[in-house]
Length: 462
Image (cartoon, rainbow, N blue to C red; front, top):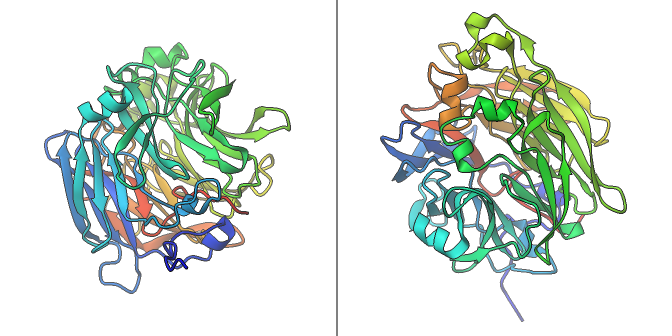
């Protein structure tokens, strides 16, 4: 009789995951935008009863010039899925790519979660040789391995795609796609395990963003704007949906956590007609996948003197919705407006009729809204957002991407991390006791919570 028990941070369903204990640590990507000092993974205290609350406890240095960006766990609740169970695995390693260097760092949190260790680095040439890809981005633990999206091919051009790492050895296995169809651009990647479907979104090829967004390409509608739907098991492209040439930069994918719900949300960063941002619901109509635009967030009129050179002629501050996140119970969608400084909360219990339930403002290109614990106006705005499994706490940081930070905040991003508390009936408020003033020259990006969070795990049971 087997005596092994699954990792206690694995949950078969989102319903059970929402009862998980409160997180005590956050792991945060921290990078030097000038590429002079080593990037690092920062460990931040989240336990209000600890003297380390709202402090950086330790950092794990990696390489110079990596630009740490998105990262994820080697294993999660998807290991309990019946079609490819791996209940013996442990949520132990953080897979941390450098989006500019294309290195993959493996960081072990097992022995001392407050002081994890860098145990292995997979170099860019090995990644390119095994997969044909570079610029690794999104990391998701899945039932068949660790899936990683990549924005460029081995030469830094298109197409980007997805590659797979082995759950046990952490070796890079190879390219995931058997037939990519018309897909050229890559960005985010996630799935509906209940539908055997993967979804991917689009940014552009590395030469379209590594020195910042190129205005001419934006005005010519040449950045990514499509969703791609794939047969997850057969690894083949099955459908493409174009949001339209006015809607540029289709970024973050947030499928419903309940595997019986065949819908999800994606943000379009910029509408060329009026600089607004938008949220779209994708859904399965019984025959194929479809989309509906459900939220428009308008630009705000602004004095050109308060805007960066890129926007002065428009006399408006765009919201620049660059991240969204869906609570584990699929009830609330959080929308980061990196341009204006707003974090919105919407009740999306009906995914086609969202209801606005709360907003706070911190930072912003024009408003520079302060935090009660900061002694200065803040720049940057809500960017990478992460939600605790019980949905009561939301954390976010303020840097988007080094070269793009400089375009929209030319005075230089001064990093920070903030926490917001959510009421079960709707509504959000800033936690006045939590503010991490990020140490220069680094700035923070993605947040991962110890034990899992709303964008880390996938579930196979409702």
